Length: 288
View (spheres, rainbow, N blue to C red):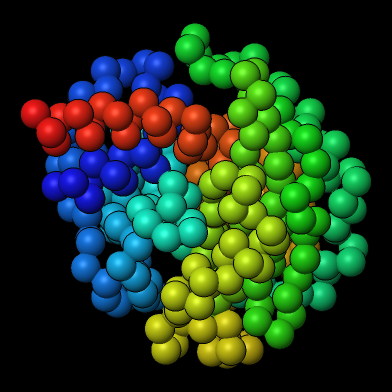
């Protein structure tokens, strides 16, 4: 049980301003955490996540419930969430969501990625979202690109990352990768402390290495003339996901647009500065 007390630091978000800490902890503790290092199937066996001894994993309905506990909304439905409880990436977390919007071509990247314009729109969208926050939530501000959007054509992956701060000057980094597949993409979000971040490739490198599509769902498995192709390419999708615009394809629009507008990846943050409070609380309870 001591290990579970340690992982609670990873869950520390602004939800604690709105809920009793013990109530939140009890709800989190009731989820089906996969603590054994192993290969775990997600999304109806479309992909595999390989965990290490440093990871705790929730899948499917437990991942959705985790997001609800921490954000108070059931609008977002991740396929999995991994919490890093030990090692150099302790207190960081990774969220996975598979999006079936059709095969994404890569030939529109240069036509849609304007890094300066994108950053300005992200900053303005974050400030606008602050006006809609409930009482008790800190305002958030985006400062700069921690890494500008980059398309890795060899590995069929897109990276980008932003850095920012809140009203109390707590710093954060959100790094995101889109791993392309035959039917669309997997959105992978790394959330952690700026001191843990050097680049998206480094922060997400191990995560991507431990996440693989099963045979038949890989990007290379696409069959021209048979498989559905997305209405727009990966460049248009990245621009819209990063800036809070609409997404590429009908069918994914309703869900992805809601969270793009709310900038959910900025709301869902582990505030490491509360770690000492949590650690002392549970260390004390263990010794009693």
